[in-house]
Image (cartoon, rainbow, N blue to C red; front, side, top):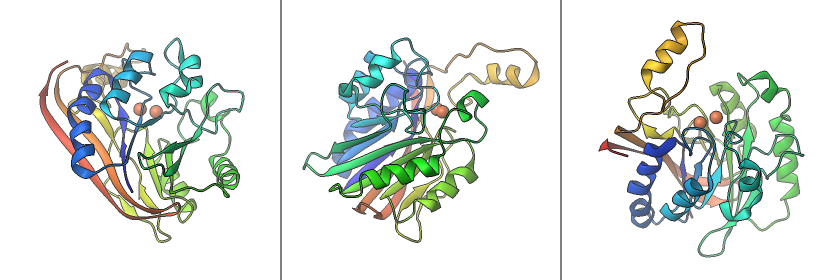
Length: 271
Ligand SMILES: [Fe+2]
Ligand SMILES: [Fe+2]
């Protein structure tokens, strides 16, 4: 089984990259399922009904998310409606609307468990103080699904720190087919099969504007770093655009045969 995982899709330019690349890539590579992180899908923050439909139509099969998923007005209903195939991190308080785990199926009917978790390090204190320990959460989830017939287990750990991601990746080695990091929008060069068989990458990257800071106009971020006042964010809407992803050949629910980066640069994309 082949699973493609795409990093955070950032705003309209990111969505354009998905529409231009994903349908052909799925056909060409024989991809069974394509997952993507949706936390920056709509205007750079959160999701809307229209942007989710746009990406489902382009071939994304299921979405994970992260700390920005609650930014648009109707986030509660979108997370609760299973038609949108959208997760929020599983280690948010259990009263948080939506779910952090789901079983989805390949076109051939094989069951894949998708799990979304959030890191604790370098997040706003009111995020990191309310989320549960990702180690305990993943242990509980894997225990819950231990008897389920699964062809693959996929984990998206949405976290800032490279060491936090590598540590949890090594902890889940041999317990999941693949473990990928998201959130930084910067792809890492360490895609590999871990010693016990799990495919791993610290960060997948993003789909979005290359000449930006994580999707945002660079001048705004310069001001943010230089002056002690808040800045209103604007996202880059045209230009060089990246589609950053990893392609994994799944062996079983706890191992994979290979993981390769699949990063594409699109020139002069206009939205
Ligand atoms: Fe993000
Ligand atoms: Fe994030």
